[in-house]
Length: 355
Ligand code: NAD
Image 1 (cartoon, rainbow, N blue to C red):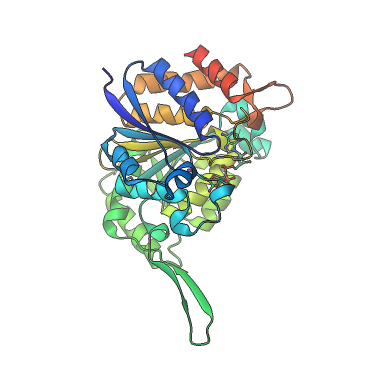
Image 2: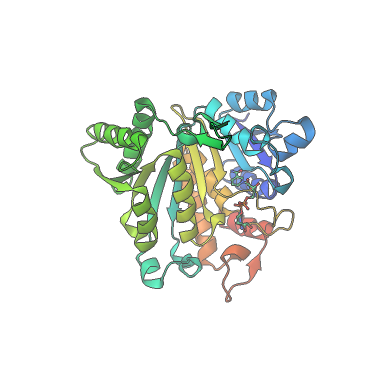
């Protein structure tokens, strides 16, 4: 009998293709360990039920041991009002499951240096960082709305707010992660302007006292955006508020060569998490067997490591991906002129062969 129940959301666009790859890898590396409950969420759910996620699907996520997600959304649903956008489903799951810590590793595989947009001498130094993004607070969840001033001018507003508990718990996870890595945390904020950032900085320093073995530095977000392209090798763990993390992790992802390579994990207080590639549903590639499946496959490795205490199996997946790349196998997004282009299925087969 399967030990763990996985809620699986294929979603839209390339979602079904990359999830198929991820499940094939999971079944190979941990046979009979997981049962899968496929849930209809995102644009497909809007078409069927008129909402991005149903109460039943949300409950199934809550009842699961973890959630594996492809991607949701696409042009067909892009112009719906905010509360009906496909991405609302994800915000809902993160909030309901209290997944406050989003981990996005960004590592430059040495064999993919040519695919990175960085200048060669910078790429040669390599980088391996972990971006920790606060996921259930800040401006994406703050009060928002529209109003008119006395002259009938329309005003739109969104509110950034954090309480100290929210900052403390993400800071703690960041320090704990740094302990397993190179023992450095850089906290990113905008404390020269924003009050919420000043509280952020204060609390990160209070939590740092619990971790005397970790070196803490602060950096303003505008400087961090610049340093990421100037010298990304300086970073180990970066921790930041929701919106800053959203933006800087996409920037970091591009430095690795392709958004199709980067996994992510969202965790709460307990072991359950949601695992997904950082890219979206890539409607331009959907159904064409062109998507890079590696980000989703590497998300499965993160899931085994962080939610199911299976580090050995996680390591095997990471090794298989690395060997696949070393042998020169490439999907379209990461290929250079010397390598043939493989489709999603063929690339998945190469990884399966390495397992
Ligand atoms: P996107 O990440 O889907 O695509 C950006 C670019 O990266 C495109 O050129 C695409 O072809 C490429 N790309 C993405 N994934 C790839 C992969 N695995 N392999 C190769 N190339 C890949 O971002 P977008 O175009 O801004 O958004 C498309 C839709 O996805 C939108 O509806 C957006 O709202 C949604 N979205 C969903 C999520 C999510 O489900 N977590 C995240 C971001 C965007």
